[in-house]
Amino acid sequence: MADAKKDPHSATVGDLLDREQQRFRDTHPRSAAAWEAGKQHFLYGGPSHWMRRWAGGFPIYAASARGAHISDIDGHDYVDFALGDTGGMCGHAPEAVTRAALRQLQNGTTMMLPTEDSLWVGAELTRRFGLPYWTLTTSATDANRGAIRIARMITGRDKVLVFSGCYHGGVEEAHVEIRDGKIGMRNMIHPNGVDHSAVSRVVEFNDIAALEEALSHGDVACVLTEPLMTNFGMIPVAEGFHTALREITRRRGTVLIIDETHTISSGPGGYTAPHGLEPDILVAGKAIAGGIPAGIFGVSQEIAERLWKLVPMVNPRVRQSAHLGIGGTLAGNALTVATMRAVLEEVLTPANFELMIANTTRLAESAWGIIRANKLPWHVTQVGARAEIMFMPKPPCNGAEVIAGRRGDLETLLHAFYMNEGILVTPFHTMFLMCPATSPADVYRHTDVFGRFVDLVRSAGVV
Figure 1: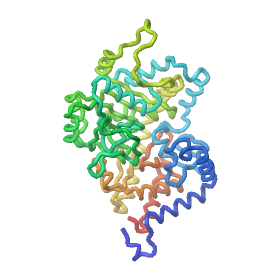
Figure 2 (figure 1 turned 120 degrees about the vertical axis):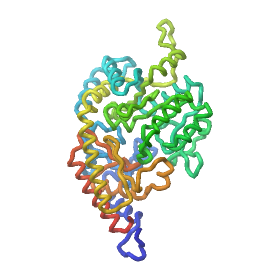
Figure 3 (figure 1 turned 90 degrees about the vertical axis):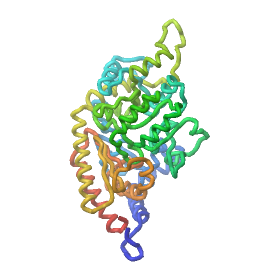
């Protein structure tokens, strides 16, 4: 890093961020005013507290969105690589989903009754992911909660094992990480009185020995994991780890839950199908219904039979059937099922995944070219239709390496610069996601902006 005392033209990352945030305020007056108005009625400024996290200092207020682009109320156009942090992976307002939603809106949205569309959806989920029995929920968080509850029911155990740095929605058991050798709350989540040591175990990702030891106590109902970690910076899976994970969980009688909420971007069958993974329970959500709130979980034949022994199928002679302790009146509603069918049948198709992955490869390769040309200690990781630029020399192996090497200041600066230049990435990490409508021109626009960001930080002497 250049010495600011020696170079009168140098600046700190903080200086550059101040400039970008001022530029954002100057060019987004209507969004700034709307944000101030929102603070009068929303607990954290917007309808969701996540919305306060954008690096400009306040979020843009969206006016419309179509395909891979968003327009804001200040008249700016953005190439959207955030895509609702995966919820919009189908693209904004895809015709097939809009058509299905309008049709179902005219025929009733929620009746707590199945529709014929559900028969097609169930069969397609089995075909894609390989698990025979499915349940629909209102979010991936709810799907994970349901999977955890089932695992506890059939094993009689109380603890859930997760990997440090993980994210599985609002699941309390996953709000932990290892930092400075101690287990605590992850990602600045505030304690809420829950004794996490009583409900969770946490080890580093890719650490087979630690996994073996943690499961040796016989009190872990399930391991909850992504196929590779995506929410702490992308952490690739080490060779042989999935084989060991599956062998150890089976030997220890622990249910293996694989959360594909992000990694469904790997292909039509997510990451699980092409890599031959064998989860006991598979979870997904976000994009699965084209942006309509939804989640899914599927269970193996063995898990289903163990559950049915505890909670048999409904006896029509008994008014109050046994309750699984999961679900909700809106779960599996007709609107969700109709849009889910449209997504699986017409949007997240093999042909569209080919397009999405090809554009991701273009983006990753062009970013790599800029990084190498400038001899920067950064890297790019790509998995299917998802890629991430990280300000570290090589991909991390676990959460500890992310904590030790991550440049959060540069990430924030990059995000603010991107917003000013018409590029959106998810504000929590520098991950890029493609939708079927993403074009090569959108990717080239990113290449230009990323190149100018590198010029900015190099000329300022911060890298």
